[in-house]
Image 1 (cartoon, rainbow, N blue to C red):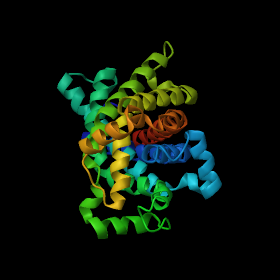
Image 2 (cartoon, helix red, strand yellow; image 1 turned 180 degrees about the horizontal axis):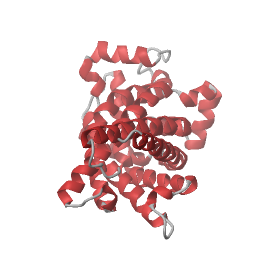
Image 3 (cartoon, rainbow, N blue to C red; image 1 turned 30 degrees about the vertical axis):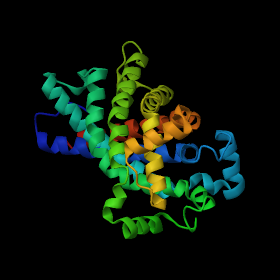
Length: 312
């Protein structure tokens, strides 16, 4: 985020916040279209690890039984989830950077270290998780609905995003939309510490001499995004497995808490089950997060330039 001009500081701050919010929404949209098929494979392997021999088998069976659209199950809630999460995440990231800048006595957010940016990212994730949890709950249930029906856990697999949302509210009340909220916080806050820390550190390391981080081209941004995503998932993947189990299995009336589900997986399936689906997840992270940051950085830069042209 740029320095706030002396004139019209409140208007400038609002425009910068709007730019971060809008650019985050654009980034979230790009992330979904680039990574949804492998995200579907990841969720299926997380929730039904014994049903498939691996990621390739899951991918092939899904296309064979559900055709190509099966890989895009849950795309509508995934779009809602990623747009809500990234719009809020990047909007609050800009604000939290300002808070860290102020408390650190710095005169510009561009002078924040990777550790300070990581701290701002973790703070921002607290707020974005609130918008993410309900939409991701619907997404995960739709992605695994065929497997749930095959095991007799649900009556039918013929249900869409709106129908699933209504079913959750009807059966579990409004609070049911926040099933897995604690595990979402447990995943997002440490995850985005490493996400933004990895992104800012890699941007710094890949910036050519005499250039600034804002001058990085598309290929370097894709690499930085991939590093950021890898840092996030490597640090919190077992938590994500537990979260997916809680959100998907609660569809069949199972609503155990985080530690209960975590210990049950360890006891019945072993440590390996906590990393089911990590392969497609790490492969997905480079195109998905590369697309996210390209969309975010370029749209944010364009919006800030528009603001500057109007003196904001």
